[in-house]
Picture 1 (cartoon, helix red, strand yellow):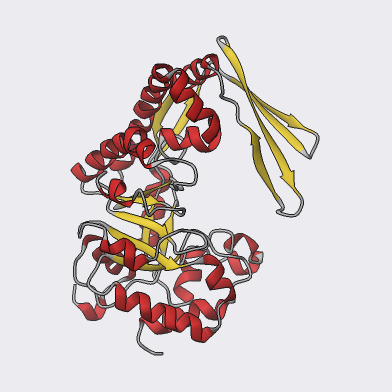
Picture 2: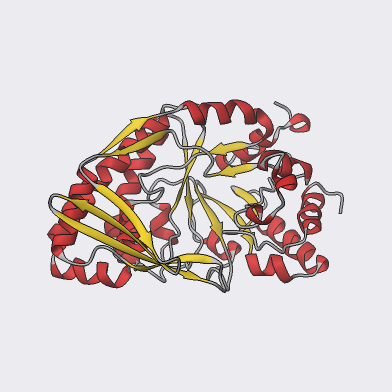
Length: 363
């Protein structure tokens, strides 16, 4: 394919693989922004919406090539509208998680992690042992066919769409409980993790057998909730497994990481991932994209660069200057331009169009 007729899909794939491109891909991440559009605006679907603004659709987290079936565990939910509880009841014990509604944030927050004690870990392990990963590629294959060359479909991986350790951090335990557990009964935690790793790997193998070229996981990596040592000890081994399976099948692995990455980027790059997605300067992250690129090997690329609150509050002139800086800094590197992590709902549509015009050289 010549540079003059490069499709959005080919442009993104070439950028990730370090091959020749006609220009840098511009692939906005519409999380949160999309949900606040009107039904009429969303009717065309994200791919068409992105194409209409002149972007290269990178459909992060679209499609799952498997389903996870649970047995020997009864799940019930209930609450009073302000606090909700989900209970997992098994023959070896019960786990309960608590969610609290924030009126100001208009969302639910996990305020009570279900796993704290040694016995809790054994219950969680039992729940995971009684999960079955069933390949279910039809949805991914249909999305892949529909998108065609108009963009890159990037389905999810993992039982919890992130690594086992990160799911302990974010959902099951929380950083504090997990840290104590790793000191008080590390063998029990490791035994549970091993079961979780095995289930996750089944999702990767099922995904690798589809037509999708690349996959993502919502890792939310950040040294605000894990240390570099934790990452290397408990997260990196699992990612090494994932990357080997995917690369053996000619697939790409994209690591969504939207937090403080400065101290874990070297370790991330040693896991076999192909791209770090949603890298962001302060205040969302703690490192600018040029500095990150300087400490990374050539075979790992970056997606991001436009910090969410900057995108929300900047003037058109400030945005133009930022985009030109990013394009100049990342020229010749594996790079996909994007707003990092998510998009505030009140970002003006004209800003998306402006970036499209800049990358195409019309501004």
